Image (cartoon, rainbow, N blue to C red):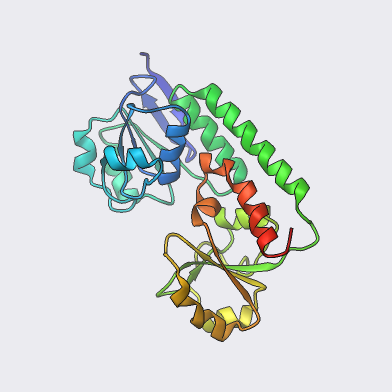
Length: 269
């Protein structure tokens, strides 16, 4: 093992005294799955309560709290030689506390190219550069095939709901927005940034062609439909897989086929 110095996606310098790392803690679900798909196993010693893929890791790896409720002491007890986090998903105070003791590499992903960069950097960071390069190539090919197979003429507007009480939608400057565009939709709330709160009246006034109710982070269900149908009686409503719209790691390999199938189910393919 030898010391290596890396620069993360926030421009921070991260020095690994032992490379490749042998005790990794992942604080981001999509990046935990990525580590698994890059071929890492026993090297990952800690994950979050929301790192549900792969199931075997979720059941057997040490859980160190939620993405925003990290147990710093529990992580310290694992003696990691690398912690992997994300600017949006983790709390700054937790990260600053952890980096006083351990190397912390942070991602900052807002679009597909930044996701590709993240995958490549995590591959280099963990000694899996060749596998990461091949993965990025496969994801690029899958998205290119999707674009070639979908209609460029139909770009219905979508209100993408992520939360209830209060209602919140995905605006611009989010990975979900970028995936909506990639999938051939337009964002009905693209004029707003991040994840704005909206009222049902605002939703009705937006008159979206479609309302997407995401499976995460809020678990929308059939019982929530009447409220939306009341304000948008002409709008089609669909439940969509939140992981395939918001996870920016290896799950992107599955996203293009899912988007094509979604468009086909809505008679838009």
